[in-house]
Each structure stands twice: as structure tokens, then as C-alpha cells.
Length: 440
Image 1 (cartoon, rainbow, N blue to C red):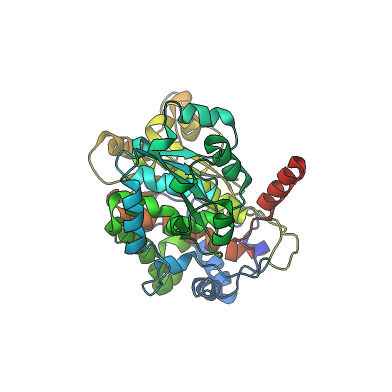
Image 2 (image 1 turned 60 degrees about the vertical axis):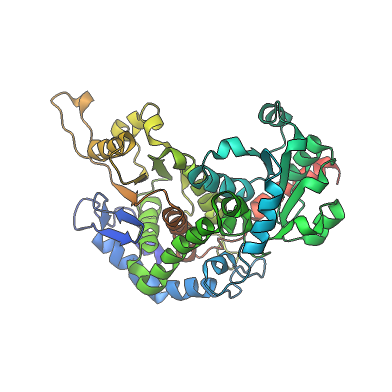
């Protein structure tokens, strides 16, 4: 059976013979028991994956073989989660960074894309009082600089330029506008192009390396997350890595029975069989309020492709439109459509375990998404398929596991769709045209 056969409309009945299980990793449990995934679909797509060696392809990526074919690169972000990899954030680097950090009141972090969304997610979720310690400058609009830096004395700040290529237009132009390049002695660079940073004027001892083959949206495990190690300790960074490695190892040991694999199949069922174009990501923890933004870039930049690995046009859909919000806030925003609207969403709901009001609201949402028939039709709701992810806590282990689940389900979908999840030529086009209009 090929993908076209599996993607045939109305082939599977989402109301009978459903696959409904709860899968557990050490720091996170994922409950599919409220989903509408037909067992026949699960059987067919897994049979297809077995015949097309999807798990072997995943292992090749994990092992560092050349699998990003359009750029002739390996995919190196997995290396940071391997025990024998030496290019992680090391203690000596962190100590040097901490000594430099001690003399400053704030950090101004210049970065965009994966060099913003990753560090920001880690900061918000794992670093105490993060917004009081770190200011992120993300774009090229001077109003952002003026608003965020009002009353801030740059002499009291440690400055970070995060750019793997050290040529990101928005990042360098923002740094130059804000600093007029007068504070290079108190500037740190995170890049794979050390020579370019040195030529720019950054001190060699202030440069932290990131691997060339680590894509920005997958770089959260690298020196991009230096702030976690510096502000919360090396143990926190190590636990983030361990949490991610647990999920990698689950795929390698359990294969198609792993959490990321089943979540990938859920996404494909909604996207390619039910023709639902959106994936809704809801979070019920304030510290994870912007996780959906991270998931949005990760999935849409990776899998927003329309040709296969041979450059041939696809005749089926790839990446869903990923959107979301912070649950307690969204309750008073778009939940009316979620409960009673005509659209069906591929819904994932995330919350830590506990008895706080946000967890009670999480349970209320779960109850509300079930059948609720009233005598008056305008009050009735109907059963909506959804998946819940409950984290043990908001620890580095748990956050690492959550992020690795999203990374891996994104990669697995790319393999099934036969696309390259690791290049981003559309983004590069935007950069090239910006340079053209700048006259460079």
C-alpha cells in the first residue's frame, strides 16, 4: 500500500475501532485515549513505514550520516544528547561566562529564529526571574529597541550576538544600531564562524562555538542555551540534555511504539486523511506559555516543503499550520470555536501535574471537549479528538523530554512524507532578497 492509498478520503472511520492508549516516558505521559485514530489507519501507515525503512532512515539521521541531501550535510543536533559527545557546553566555558556575567546587571541577547525562540523558551520555562535578567532583541524595528531598552545603560550590560553564520542581517543591524559597536569588549558571540566574529571585533575568548550542521530550530541543546548553564548551573543544562536523550532512546528501543512516532501518525491522520489543516498546541503552565511559538517554527520551517527528496512535486499535503496559546487566556479568546465551531483541529494539550487552578482548568477543558448534549442545541458540544501531555514537573528533565518529542515527531513526519526537514531554502530566499534591496 502506498501513501496515496492511505490518504484516500473517507477510507477510515474515525468513530469505530479506534486506537486509544496512554504512553509514558519517565518525565511525561501522553494520553491518546480521547483521540479518534482508527486502528486500521495505524496498521496501514505502520506497514508502509516498515516497508519504506522509516526507522532505519531515522537511525541514519541520528548516527550523523549525510541525510540533508540538498545541502550535503549531516544533522548534528542529536550529538549534544549523546553521552560521548565532547562539543557540549563545558564547565570551563561556563565558569568564564559566569565570571563575565557577574559584573553586569542585565544581558541583552541579539538573535532571531532559532537563536531567539530556543533561548527564550528555555529562559522562560527554567530560569527564575528571566525577564528581569535578560532582554531579547529579535528583529530590525527600532521601536522594539527603544521600548525594550528604555532606561537601560549599556555599560551595565553583557551583550550576546547569536548567529550561526555571523551574517544574520536583522541580528547584526540591531546590534550595530543599539551599540554603535562601542561595546565589543563586553560582547559574546555564539557562532560557527569564529573568524568572522573575530574580524568583526569580538574578542576570541568571548566566542562560543555552535556546530555548522546544527540547524537553528534544533539548536536549543547547544551553546545557544548557555544562559541556562550560567544562571541555573551546569546541572540544569545536563538534565535538559538527559531529558531529550530519554526520548531519543525511546524511539531507538521502541520504534513505532514510541511517543514521538505515534504523535507523528496522529498529525498525519488529521492532515492527510481528515484534511484538517491546523495543529492546535495549548499550554496550561505560564512558564510554557510560548511553547506553541517554538513548535510553530520547528514544524513549519522543517516540513513546509512541496517537493520530495528527489525534487519532484508532491501530490499530498505536508506541514500543518501550527498555532496555539496559553490555556487560561485562550479560554476567553478562541475556545468558543474549539467547543462549538465547525472546524476540527488536531489538538494537543500540555500541562504539568498538580492541583493548582491552571491544572483544574486543564481538566475542565478535557471534560468540555467530550459530548455535552443539552436540550437547547445552542448549548450542546460534540466530542472532539485531542491528546493530552502531562509533565511530571517544570524541571529541565521534563522540558527536555517535551522538546525532544516535538523535534522527533517533526522529523518522523518528514521521513514519511519523503521531504528534507533540515533545509530552509524559502527562508534563504527572503534573506537574499533583503540583501538585494539593501544593495549588498
